[in-house]
Amino acid sequence: MPGKGIFDEGVPLKDERRYLNFAAIVKLVGGIPSAIEVIDDYISKEVFYRGLILKCSRCSNVDWFSISEITHTFTCRRCGKNQQFRKSNWKHPDEPSWFYKLDEIAYQALVNNSVVPILTLGALREKCNDSFLFCPELRISEHGTEKHFMELDICCIPDGKLCIGEAKSNGTLATKGVSASTAATKYRDLAVKLGATRVVFSTSSDAWDNPSETAIDSAFSTLPHIQVSKWQTYGGYQSATTLAAFFPQMENCVCCELPGLDPSGRRHT
Image (cartoon, rainbow, N blue to C red):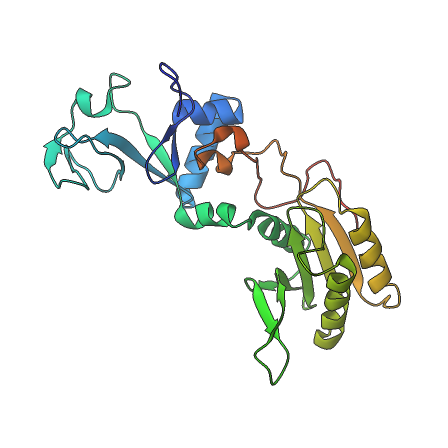
């Protein structure tokens, strides 16, 4: 919760979302012109929604209200009282201040670590000359059985060629009970069965760890017709905005730019 007299860190509410005002966005992106550009762009794309934070005069419940919900009055979601909003309903500043809500799909994507696959798909799309088709995460099962074989974070068809891949935030292919070597081998075998011509391993860490690097190189060493890419989708972008600032703990924010990979060009192919 922002301290007394601090008005540039947004407001966290009981729904565990943080709602940002103009001052908070200016602070995050480093200037008024950038903040204006971000707000206009993200509202047009329905990533941001504009509204007010108001406190009920009867039951003291505090909520965010979309601009589409209010006129000269608002209705409390807890006690149902319809009331004119006055200075006592918003307190600061002297006139009501807009607060911006992050779209729920974008919020859930951040909560569930979807940034890395989104950035990876965006980078693959940018390289296309003709067409780009993709589908969300897939669960793969062997024919004739319901047993879960593996999950595909990346499955797309850039320029008519099938590409599959793994997107991780921790820089390792290893998971509980599965070694990096086993994971890389599964991707190799699946690529062969599906006829994929490219496999991408993408991480938001600084790099894949040594066991994963070794496992990937070893698994695909005898398949020169499959292009293997190892990418870093960095979290430290100097980006248009910081979507993760909508989480209650601003100090844990991760800057993210959509779409694309590290602008400095640090990627391995």
